[in-house]
Length: 366
Image (cartoon, rainbow, N blue to C red; front, side, top):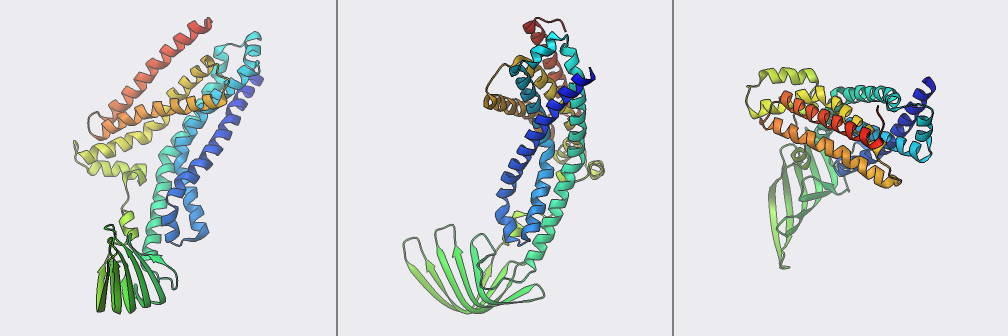
């Protein structure tokens, strides 16, 4: 019996490790790449980029681990069915209840790791990433402008200077070239002898130069100036909100913040939903994997691609229903406690129904 227990667990964990590492790597690369342009502009170097990718990976664990566990169950039983191992086990007298013991142990470990990931790793990684980006933004806004390098300092303006000097967070620049691309299809080129730029205040003052505007009808307008002041919204400050959100708070910070909010307000419902989600999210793994376990016994697909797509679709179906209820809770339509009661009650009834259908289909009295 112990040998059977170890064999089934080994199958579960081998597929779990395979799917977890592949999905974690793939989704981390995809998610991290979307913010790569902004990260490169901060000039944080290769180590900084790797740090942000690592923090992204930590944030994905609580999402990927249940999915990997579900796929591990489906593919384990599919392999054992194809190689006649399930038939051999049943011929030796093993029944459905014998598979339950390694399954419950597997679910327990997945639930514990998911709880640790969602309760602690996810908000901690978000908080570290926010603090790191905030420090990088502050450093970038007070750093010297690189010389002889095109530098974006707003969504519409690119700056090129031959000389730059930093004094009290203000950049004094010489031999200035600025490219402007407005949303109205007007393109501009600024040439100036010197000037200064304050990235924190969003102001650029040019001294002695010319402006060339190319309009959409190919008309060129030329202006000469002695002094020209440009106001802009710093791109990095616009993109990043410099405050800690509820998803980045620790559980105890969230609890203390919740005590200060007035009940029956939109902000209270959002914080209360986050508070309950930190506690109960990991337990959604139990009905997910139990349904996956029952599904594994009833499916007879030989296509691994179809099985993978079916597992992913089933996973998203379960968590779409959870997130739908969560959105109702955040809107104040249902209380967070009632949300989880509805979710677990519904899937408990679904598990019981599926179990009865499976018992009749296999014709075995478990």
